[in-house]
Length: 146
Image (cartoon, rainbow, N blue to C red; front, side, top):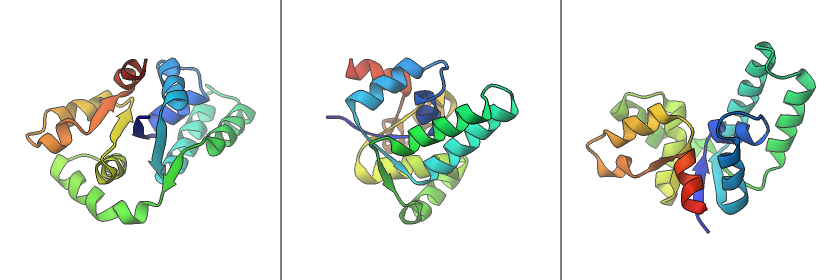
């Protein structure tokens, strides 16, 4: 079974119908998943923003949070990832919160799956082979599992 580190751009698609939801659900059903505990705060923030933008009702956001909370996924503490994520953020000139997911994936020799195509493009343009193959787009991961 494939092991993936996923971020909030994937997890929220499990509970909110949007572009990529089918792929996110395929990943949920067919792979072993992990994430840093940062995922929970980011999902809560995304759900809150969707309520603020009138994309979700408050009750729908609460239900979504409850469902994400119950997903069978290994959650790792961020503390152990802080130094490596900071180094990556500096090296890649990219926000550290995204690098926390990348650090977890690299630490465990897993793929990082995200719907953030900008970040994946940036990683693939890096000179370091370590980063080029560390992340995969959600649609690519779902296609690989099919």
